[in-house]
Image (tube, rainbow, N blue to C red; front, side, top):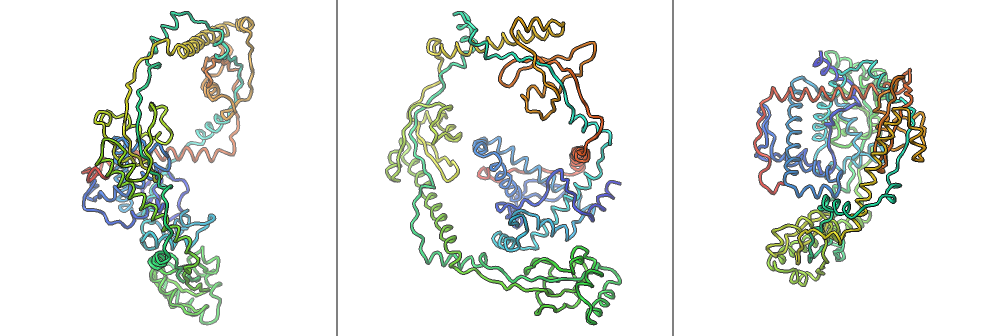
Length: 632
């Protein structure tokens, strides 16, 4: 049964195929979500379990950071749209609800990620790696900076992996027919032969003539295209944090910063140990005592680990484990390992959540603290950056206050701050000066409210430590331009449109002639020729419009040609005559990859259906999306 497979899958290795990536989102900006205590306000309730507004806020901030990284400046513009922000928050809340449903199902089914899976997952997190390998020093420093313990991290990773196991089992239960994968493989490698004729539109433009009526008609039909756009003149003050001068950092401040954050510059003691582990059972203690006796009799710890340990992974290496630090292992194991004082010493039998252990000390790395001299420059740079940020913030606040207190112009603010007030010429939203060509600025510059009130704008945050206040000084409404003023543009566009239509008519005529077997004469008359392309694949380096159309065409037969008229990417017309289709008879070595893709898509559909079933059975109450507007 499917759910039996879930339980079984929880004990196996973690599948590499993940449909919906529910894993640890461990970017430093998001680490706080593991330790922040939820606020009492509730965003939603799922089967009696609350999702707090604080949880929603943490998840929203992480999603916002992800979108900002993905979309760049475009996302900053989207943030000005309250509807978009609300949509993102609702989407994040829905993800939290689905996550809660999955967690509840994981608990109900008894799915549990093993300790080895948790350790492997932590070691593969890129935040803890250097040069592609787990770095324990980096791991410890990041934990200290984020204020969470190794145990807290393990618990949260275990929870995420348990969710993942549910999905892996779902994917594993999906299947696809061999024939389906084979057909898709052969179709993906299909090749086609085509005869085609290209009719360039650009070549016709110079030959097109227009009379006065055609020009006037085109102008009337497309009058909106030839309007003078709305324009404004503005004054603005732009603050740039990168231009803020910073005083020399006081040496005492560097010392105080170093002493206040000494833990960040301290590497705790590390130990390398080996262990022999037996899984918990009725005979485990007796069997471990026997191993203990064999050690006392002089047998090799490494050989016994290889022969007797249930930890096969470390046993193959004589029981040797990776370097460990205080708090990085099970508490009982950790305590016993750090109680050993001499290399070669063996611990008493230790019982942990994993089983019974005998531990031997292999090597010690003493803890050490980086001296101030080694980190002084980094601390000074950090303090300078912090001071610049504070100074910029003060400038921002002062600009906001002055532009509000003296709303009729920016002169007072510029004088008090000792900065320049810039005045622009008329510009539209399409040709704004580069320094203020930002959707947030343009929204204010062309707003009716700012124009009619004749007041300074509020402080507009631009990101990258930049902020601006603007004042609209003049406005010109959008207005029609007379034909005489835009006649050259009208003629150019009208000729292009007429040429395109003539070319479409010609392509239709060619298609009809080809279908009737009269295309040779037509081509001779128009001084065009047929081009041939053989063995084209879906990946061939041709115009995408040609490839897409070609592989959508039906195969030709003896009774009827397979013809198609298309518009190419450059606006030219083309007529295609599909001559042959070559489909491989044998499958390729990509069959397993294609099958996995089909299984993954099928699993995704099953996952979505399962979530809908969970929701249909659940008692879900949505309460509030935000505590106040500031959360947006």
